[in-house]
Length: 600
Image (cartoon, rainbow, N blue to C red; front, side, top):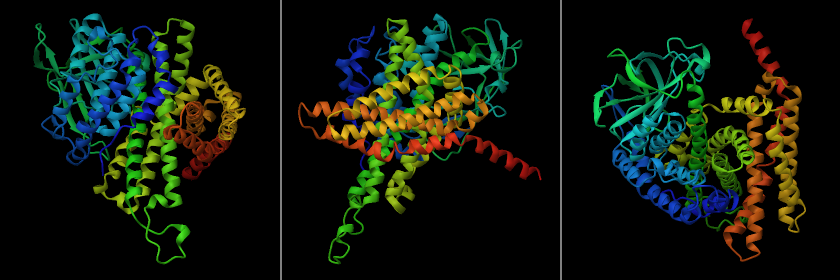
């Protein structure tokens, strides 16, 4: 099978036409974004194809190894990370003050998609570094910023987020790791699990951002602080000093992403405590960690898109090459030759759904990334607030819907391959195994859905959701009144789906019961994804029709065809989700009946 190739034409279309790169470039500090965008994306695509993709299958086969607390990554990873850092990719969106590239997040989206599509196991390391840098930039002291951020950007150090503990899982209120003052630093003791790149050999040092409790901390999440705990301590001259009391006890043996070490980390098991520095103020660790978690959630959503794109490319290539069966139109002709399976109707349906869903996810994610830039830098506070609200609403949707859909698309790709997909040699099985974690780590789909209905819908009475729904309705109405019959059809289908979303939202708000809302939360999140993705797909068709009036272009004709396919075959899911949400009470009744049966 051929190497992954970034869909640069579609990426540029979304960044420039849908996400509004020109408007982002008008924000303070982003003036060069329009001019450098094409070059940045092309260079990233080349790196993904030539450096990361060749290590993807071999990294999966070799995996990581653990011996006496030392983790060794697959062959080639250390050298690839060095090149990655030297080329400046780690600090792409970091302010130039710290040695970064200073580019907007709307360009980081497609670049991150390329890394994850080419090699998900590798991409987790720089992805966590970027999240750690942002967290430190916003919350650390100036001395800590000067110490840690340049080292992370240069690739000399990597960063982790250390949250989960064996007894706590996703319930961070149950964190038990302790931090005891020791002079101007703290000694940490406790255990963290599922720490991605918590130990490795690709960089000389690791800075762990750890959630822990001070001796006098209140219970629950209000008593959690954040600490920066390096693997090796620093000497006054900036060189590496003694090994800190931070040790990798084991790594997980996993279904997928085998090239990405998932570690159990023990703090303070050998030398009385791991030395660390308090980041920010005491007992505000959850607040700070949410910066990192939100960035990670968005990043994982993009991982779902990247692996969906890779799976689609593999399935399309196989369908065009695999010759099997006769064309249904020639079944009566026994002399007819077999045809490529791409000629079979159900294979075309599967490929059509994969393509349409991937393009819808990409559009929604990049538009959300643009709001991140506006929320951070727009000179008008009212505009910043609107973009923050949109960003907060869309983050759990991008994370939840894009990863669930990525799993669906990888599964469909395997189905296109048939039995050939179930064996490792074809490579598509790895995509299926790798993508499966994306709907689990950084908060399962259920956790994202609870965040959506609890914090984003019920808390503000649906104000932000209502504003976005009205915006989608406006888009649908504009299409319904268009002179072009295809755009009218797209508008009609989008209008129906948006009405279903509006009705479901009003129903949840009218009930006001968090338990019933939780019962319907995942279908509600998926309903949002389908409709919001359809909104961006419809906008794509609208823009493509305008471009075709200027000159014929197969790319723009394809955008309209894909939009119509999406509206016919994907937006129709909205009615089913809405019906499931309306029936949420029966979910609770079924649960109660099951509990009674078990009790007997």
